[in-house]
Length: 117
Image (cartoon, rainbow, N blue to C red; front, side, top):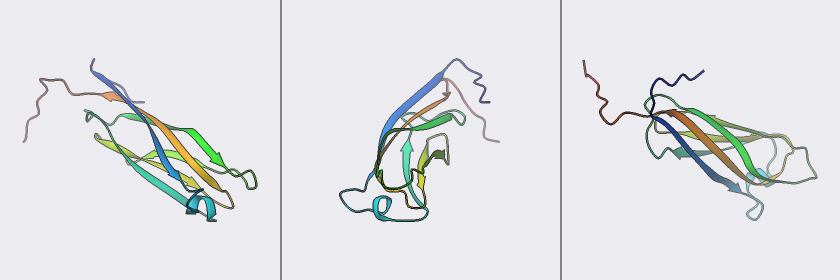
């Protein structure tokens, strides 16, 4: 659980087109076996502590001639951003993917300060 201990809470969100491989014959559409795409996201304002980040598919275009397999995750979460990771495997053919995301966490106060020891 991410406990927020101040009253200054930030919510950042977005929608990212990860790829469109149908027209170009890219690996998500024409490949087989394990495949992945990473996309870096930078928060509008850095958080004070690691935020809670969620990702979900907001658009998916796939072939109906193969099995549907996919995994979407937020990885490498930091105070300033994270990576969206989309994975598929086997004979799955993915034409296009868009992923929405939301980050919620504590922000710094205007008069916060830190001691360097």
